[in-house]
Image 1 (cartoon, rainbow, N blue to C red):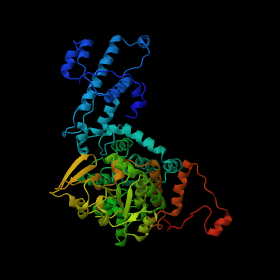
Image 2 (image 1 turned 180 degrees about the horizontal axis):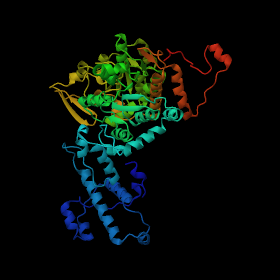
Image 3 (image 1 turned 60 degrees about the vertical axis):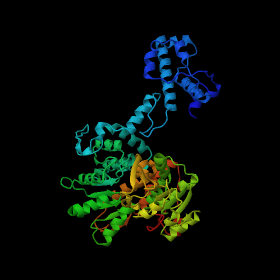
Image 4 (image 1 turned 120 degrees about the horizontal axis):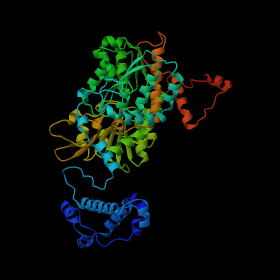
Length: 577
């Protein structure tokens, strides 16, 4: 209502208020009004509260065109009948709004929209909140084709491509490093001949990365690493641009693995590079296509879950290709994990549950870079933060940041919200859920959904109720409710979006890692997991500095000799994080 007060027509308090208000508009009255006169309609008027009258009069001042006199009305070419029709429509809208306002809420479903909603608002609502019969059809059963005749893809709806292209164009403006890479290396085509199969979140930001790889000469096929994070319009735009994409928002577990299998296309297409987020694609090729796995030139992995799987393969002597650990690069840890989560955690929570954070008791499990970002954001809005941690160093950091370090069992009874950020499994178990207070909100900011023990919640005595997209109420026999977001999957990308600029840092690191592995001379990288060379980390950072008009100081020769480094870097040792 605050916005309405500033609309054309003055404030509510300045308006002359009528003493009467027409009765609610009904279909029967619509027939009667055709024959009624203005005097008859006035006789049926009823009294109304002054507050509501102010609101409705202010609304009328906005809806009714403002003309200084009848001459101005005639100058604009509006006939008297048109003006009268406009007034009649105004009465209908006002009457419907009062009827809707006075109607008690029902349990049948969400409150319907009143007739006074603008057409643009209604269109927006229907495009987001409804599902057409075409979209209800499983994507696997659709026969879709791009304007260029490409059919080797599987997405929700190829007709959404124009909107997805606009989203990608917007994201490009916030991803300067990738655009610079395209400009500098586009002519050289450092990935010419590379066949990259990828499994990441499919968003506008990752689309910029995928199209950058294609611009550098690579052939790309892509699937989604998360069943909820795919932006369908972006997937359509990628397919229209010639990229074979197999992903849509809301995939089932079976759909997820079907898309990965179709993406690999081992029978007709042999990839030589993997870009993975979580290790699912790597694991699939390793188990289902071992001969293809051995022919790879390299793997680039960006998540803690995927890196853990690669290190297990390496320890067992089963990793037969070099792999690049992007997750532990400085640019990924200090920017994507920290700053991205710091901003997107609030966006994801606000979009799903509209919660107010001031005074809420929040338990954050894990105080790595992701946990630090989440805590900083929540603390800034007045939440009371508790941290659980297994690492004494991270626990000490939390204490020095003014946070209370406890075990989850200690704080679970009083927690209003529990957020997991560990990358581990079974962090929140059924025992914890049973001890939670009613209304406690549980979500995950780690890559995988293994941090929350969902299997223990799918029992007969517990009821699941979907109250809105990505929001489930789990109901105990005694009526207690726990709110679970995104079914325990990554909150920020499942329920919201993330800043393009900070993803530009990670995406640039991934692109450089692929270029390095593909062009490295034989023998430089063995069958092991490597960190990205520090020189590349610093190069990625330098590509983003012009956005801030930042000017870096250059070492003198004497200063460089004193520090024992090159004046052009790298400025930190490889083990620095």
